[in-house]
Image 1 (cartoon, rainbow, N blue to C red):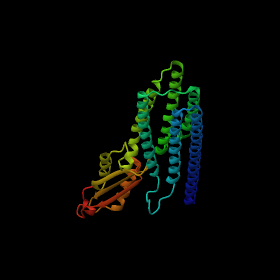
Image 2: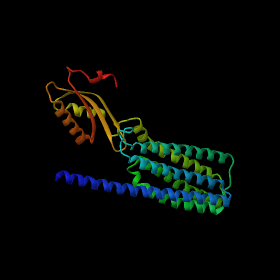
Image 3: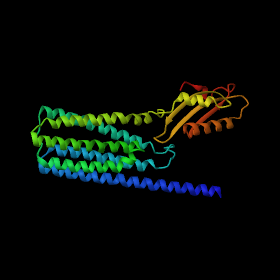
Image 4: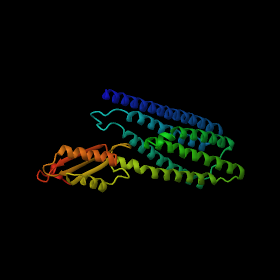
Length: 309
């Protein structure tokens, strides 16, 4: 009976998780649709008003839609179960997608900076209220899209990268509205490239702040907050463990961390009991549920010769 109850609870939790994932997918899909509509509207507005700047902003919004499509696809792939090719599963695809989106953001910010410098050298007029009005529409849609992905961005570096795309666009829309208004009221053409440079710097600042965890995971780095020396000391303090070496700590993905180590166990001690106790301690104290421990004694020597790691 207890087994059946546990299985039922697992099935319920799995079903609830699946419903949450499906709801998240619908939000991302809605955000994609809204951004594609905005792109079409801005291109049409740019053609009608003759504004190349508005068409350029449409391309920027198209990049938002593309980033969300990448994020959406990555979410779907990440839920695939582990197989012979990917024994850890496919969850890390979200980290790869985040890196792609952050790289795109860097390129966009550099392009905006280049355009701003070119416009300082050769100022271009902003054409009428249609640009300001469409910037206002873009702001509403960007805020709505950011709202759709905000909650998801807290738990996924992949969705966070797409969220920052929209946040940067929302800031751009505000800047375009302010700049357009200043130009219409005071004929101050230089404000447009100045604001564009500010947007470029703003995007770069956000990317450089948020890309580090992505690179850390892809470089098999230890997660922030977990110190290798502290974990080694905790293992060595366990009864029956004389020494710890060859300890490696890395993130499989955002939610899972793995640890491996060689334990020198006291002669005559039960390897299985010591290893089971160390694993229980790692789970309870550090939240490390994925541990691979190689037990050995001083007489048996280090497994594999303990070549330098």
